[in-house]
Every structure is written in structure tokens, then in C-alpha cells.
Length: 347
Image (cartoon, rainbow, N blue to C red; front, side, top):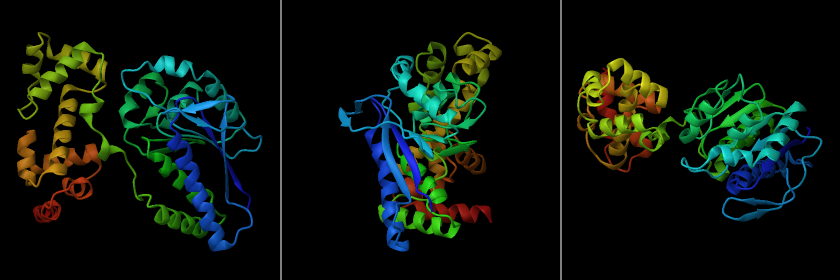
């Protein structure tokens, strides 16, 4: 079979671990394929490419880079270091050469993939317009606001739309690599599956991840720099376990209920109740992770009495039931007990 050629675009401030974590997983896949099938040629060929002669990655790491080869099957764009309070406009302006390179490569009908905040470079190149996309959940709203013609799903782990693939936060470099191995490591599906399975097993890469939802923390993702919604959020945070009352909330800020809903949604993209539900689920996640409290006690502490309502809301936010979440992320001994109670309740 033909060698699958990948270029990983390095640039100043990119995460070196995303560049080389992705590349190293394909190297392991090559080794496994060679062992299983006695390949003379590697299944994957990976080059670190750049739009500049010298690149310094995040943390001051100098990278050895080359030009983009004429023959390329995939260009991968890693993420970069950015804090929510930093100037994204300035950061992207400084990467104008990289954006132009992405645009040129895409113009050759080469598939493009991004890791984490690399999606913003794809957006600047015009590749997200009319497509579904994702990025690190912390910056999903910023991506949606900046590129309104894209359908951004901040909870998706990996989105593949018409030759443009975007992934979630940081460690999804490995998910992207596994996706590439699964579809390009061999001509037969059984062969590709075997190489991918053994690669994941040898490297301890977790399998079965389909969503960023279990990792989302609404308190961290709260919108900054918007005074009205920020004050409303603080008010709701302080009263999160109490019953929600829109009229009371509007009166506290001397506006009508209609104005409250309109202004809050304009600034945040959601309703006050939607934000409050996210806060409550976030607090429930913390309790499930760090305590052995019964589900009914967790619910009471975050403001819910009806188990069915809470389970549906929790699953909608995280993609997991409370028991599944505690089993995956909790350190306590109550996971099995909670699962048994859930099963008995459903009967």
C-alpha cells in the first residue's frame, strides 16, 4: 500500500506536545504494522513543516522544521497557548503566514485537521464556513462568535466535515492520531482495526471517548468582560441551590423579565436558567468526584429534589449518568452503590 504522508504545521507558540504526540503515535503504528505484516515501507510518513525558517514552540522549545512537501495526504494544525483574557485578535494576526499556508494547502484539495485551538487558524483561512466544527470546550463560544458561519459544537470530541477535521482540547491530539490510523493504516478494514487497537493498547491511549462534555466546567467557562451578565452570574452563583425565579432575578437588577432574558442571552448565548443549570451540574460533578454522598444528598446540595429531572439534566450536560460519571472520575467507594440504586429505581 502507499505511504500516507502527513505534515504537522509548527509555528511560534504552538504546543510541541501536540505536534510530537500526534507524530509519535503514528510512529508506533508504523512499528506495530511492521511487526505484524513485515512492511518494507512505513504506513505513515510524518514531517514537521512550517511557514517560517525558525519556530519556537510554547515553553521556549526550538523546533526543527521543513517546507511543506508537494505530495501530502493530510495537514495537521496543532493548538497554541492562550489564556481567556489574552488578545486573540493579536495572536491570530501574528500567525498570518500560517493562515495563508493553510489556505494554499487546502486549495490543493489536501484534507486539513486541527487540534485544540488550531481550529481558529482554520477559521481564519475560511475553512470553517458552512461546516460543523469543534475546539477546546473553554474556547468554543469564542470560536462560534468569531466564525458565525460555522456550526460549532463545543462538546464534540472530533468533527469531520467534508475534508476538514477539528478536535477538542489538548489531549485530542491522540484521538486525532487514532482516527487517522483507523482509516489509513491499511487497505482492509480488519487490518486497520488491528493496528489501531494494538497501538492504543501499547501506548495506553484511552479508547471510547466520544465527547468533551464530561470535562466541561461551566464555572471556568463563564463569560468574562461583560458586566451585566457577569453580575447576573455572580447573583445566581450565590443562590444556586435555591429555587429559580425569573421575576425575582429581574427585579434584583431593576429590569423586566424580557430585558433580563434578552440582555443575558445577547452576552452569553444562553438563558439565566441554562447558566444556573450548568452551575448546578458543575457542583454536582465536584461532589460526585470528591465525596461518597448519596445521589439524593448530592441533588439536595445543588438544588434538585426530583431524581428523574436531575438525571436527565446531568446526562444532557455530561453525556453520562451520575453513576457513570462517579465511576469514571470519582475517587470514593460509592460508585457501585449509586449504580445499584439507579438500576433499582428504574425497575
